[in-house]
Length: 146
Image 1 (tube, one colour):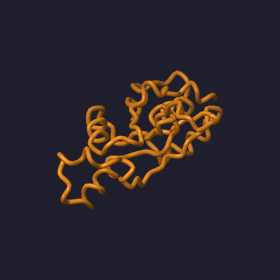
Image 2 (cartoon, helix red, strand yellow):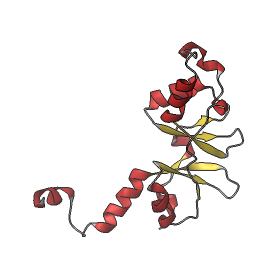
Image 3 (cartoon, one colour):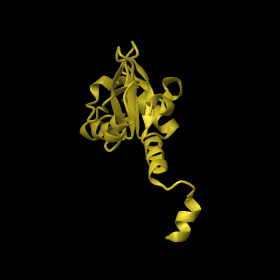
Image 4 (tube, helix red, strand yellow):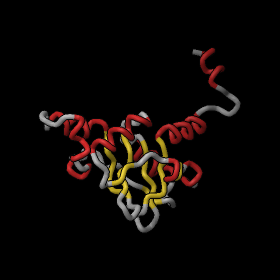
């Protein structure tokens, strides 16, 4: 199956630029209630993923840093522990399933490594669920049987 069907395009994905500040990153993640977001370069390349944990560990390691000072800290100064592996738009579903075991989302890039969107783990699980469940069954029937 073509993964483009599952693609959430970059225009709909909450991202941060690699030149964002720690404060901008925290505020964007809080506003959208995400625990991880892609980091994109100025030229549109996927660079990495920043997580709440990355930000918390940075704050822990810099106890003198107050919230009012976070606009002075560049995101590139924060060590990022997770680098979600990417797939190209022509990847197959097996590639997505393998990556979704350890990633909340799979970044999708074009052949020049430009970020074009993500495929969410929940969409991959929904796809697999439809393959595994017998045709005609639905959630209510499964709950009654349990």
